[in-house]
Length: 280
Image 1: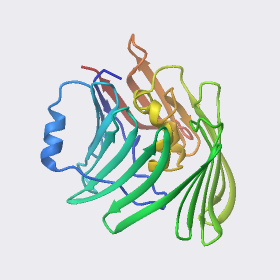
Image 2: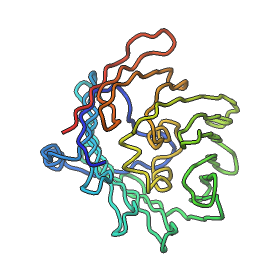
Image 3: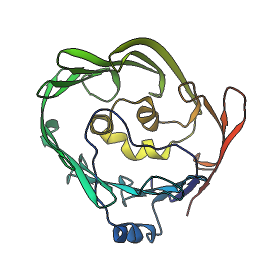
Image 4: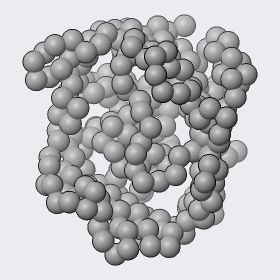
């Protein structure tokens, strides 16, 4: 994506809670410098709680995400780094004055290692890739990602095992355009739930997904298994989300990017928020 976007929204992005270490690292001066960049910016502003600023490099890759709250919580920022051949190899997360990192290394085109450090973490995970399954493990913690095929682009199941006990098991389904359309939470927090959620989309462009397209595999390893994370990787824009009970109505520009949207509560159609996208 080589356009700039400003967007008013309530909660499109959040920190994933997936029992994995958080990743960090930007100062206030870094954020001031980012905001001054006049191009390749997507700013998602929460009317009630600050903004998320998405910064893209000249090639359209997602480079930084800054969060600046207005009424609660704390500042945080993500920074993404890439290899010379455009593979995502680091996410740095900064919260207040603390940092944490996730670092991915490659052997040619294959993920070779996954390490997280910062805050209280220092975790060199072991990575095993067998056909369409990636297993990431550390001591008694095992995270297993199953993909639709050997190209490891589309996750179909996520399982988290702790001390030989399955704590999380989620299966995913997609439409013909690779949008996430279903998530079945079989086990959550060690409890069997068998809860099914469904998602629908428009047929226009999702700018965040465009920027991460070539790095979907690493993004799922870093950000986790949440349906909301996978919705961000879907090529089109979310229209209905039964998990969050939200629905969206969009207006688009001639390039098929959203310029305005209304987010409603899908149970009673009450207004949650109004979104405005500014491209410059």
